Length: 186
Image 1 (cartoon, rainbow, N blue to C red):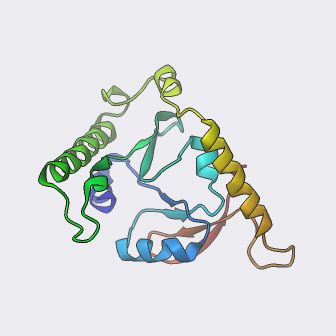
Image 2 (cartoon, rainbow, N blue to C red; image 1 turned 90 degrees about the horizontal axis):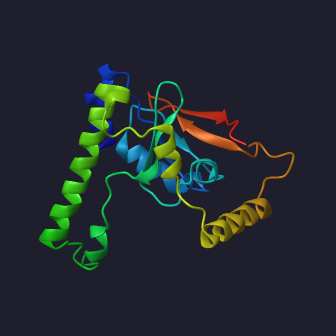
């Protein structure tokens, strides 16, 4: 879905940046390799995205304009909970749930298209105040989960002499070549 949208809106100054929130690259790479994206793709092993932007579940999207302003904070990226009604044995979904899932995705993608084409004039862009009001609330459960994740990361952090620096994010270039990039997200 994102690759098709990226290609469709290529002339609109629109870029998709995908970030997998996986503490182990080996968990994300098969999915990324299968998707074969031509847009930037990162693996956030330390879940910095969760800390900085309130991402607590995936898929979520954050809309950031050319000026670096968040015009829509973290939100479900056209996802619908219809998968919860899926038969786990046959992997079939009831028709009404499948239709709602498809409609949610189509509605969301139409909103992204409108924003990419109309910019700040899009009805889907939040003002700074509205974006602030829509920021996810940090619940006690979310804070506890983030703290436990940090503790786990600390316990398995590489030693000073290891090859991979703490804080590294694995980035996949548009050509699919794997490159390493350090983040300054802290």
